[in-house]
Image (tube, rainbow, N blue to C red; front, side, top):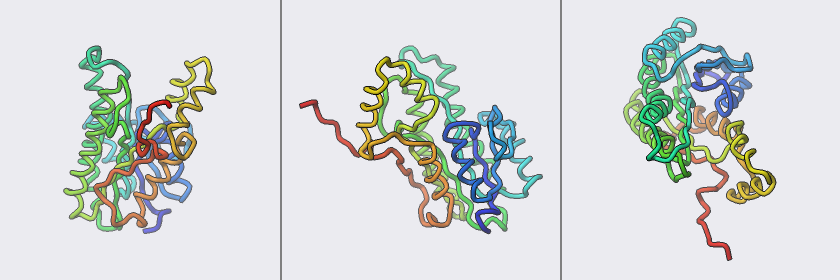
Length: 250
């Protein structure tokens, strides 16, 4: 099966990294499905409104894909949210919502996509989950988000083990600081923006921030035959940020 014949499902594809992932697959001619609670601005993908934290909603999504296409080649679990709060001020309902959208969604889609990924005419099925370097290190006030992304990486390992005998590979991508509207809003609050930009860029040995396309290219590679011997891995896409050990100002 060629790239142009692949059926690809991307959760949380309406914006940011998800939209870039959809664009990357679509440019090869793949049929891409966007599962999100809000519609994407582009008509590149088939939009199916889905609450990925709800099992009944995910079941409906997979039923629609089965009736429309009969199979699924690639599942990309990208949906995610983040809250900022000290642990002592994090509300139970906010913690639960982060875990539901970021982790439970991966479980539900992986569970209910299994039969579609196992169809006999699917030649190289793959699952790619979006984790984060915050599952490997820490940023202030992100305890729920960091815990959820570490869980995504752990779930990836288990999926690779269980689904491997069925010829389904599963990996995760851990982005670093990616230039998205969310991060742009975070930086825009500082009065001297150039100083802030320089400081953030200095964290990265490559000398720049990441772009959504950097993540999308990695996801595309992990879903393709070039990475056919890679499964159960977390690929860090952070411009070398985690490779740099901090030094005191001298």
